[in-house]
Length: 282
Image 1 (spheres, helix red, strand yellow):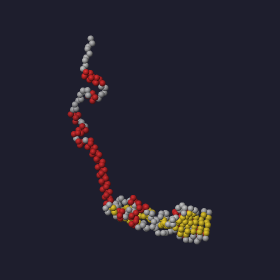
Image 2: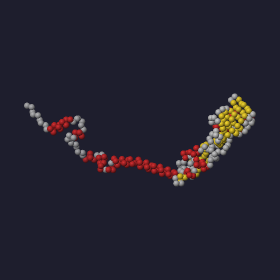
Image 3: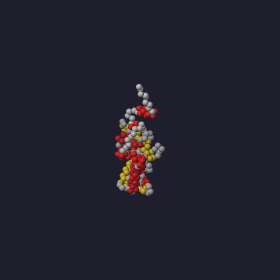
Image 4: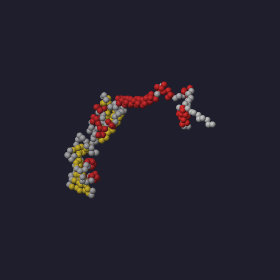
């Protein structure tokens, strides 16, 4: 005789169905929701709890509090470092001012003009409430006017501890005059630089066509012992007029090589130099 089917309450069926759906390997936390009891922690395990478990009890150890000081440390260090740098810079400025300037090599320019070009005039160095410009901070960046002036060929600066600056310059020398196409005369140095406010000196260079001033200057220098009066250039040649005669050539190199012939062959006359020979006119 078949035993009658056991009647299972509805709640039990639901519970059994849920239990049967559990997969092997479910975590203890998953099974705990079905009534599994968790062991109560003992006193030892409670004592081993991490410090973060008590964050609410100690606000000083909160992450927000630690993050604030960690972030504030870098800006504070930067401010202190900047204050030290500014203090040292100010100390060098006020403690080591420029008190003496020595100048060598000037001839056309005055000492006052050289100081102004070097940024060391009285009004230029007495700044910031009458304090003199700091010796430590002076350099070529402030003396750019020396290289921009046409009279100065070269300049050197030397700082002598604790408060002196020495300036040595080499001035250009006027050697000739250049007549522009409009008839105006300019004084030039040996390198062709035009020198303002220079007194007229040397031979007069003029011509037309491509600029041959530097070649004319070399020719004038080669005949300087004959007291050159003028040098005239054209696209086809160059004429040098001296106190003892005139010499022409289409090749400036011939003027330098055979120019001495003017002493013997062109006394008071004119000599023309060609690659193939010499023509003398008296």
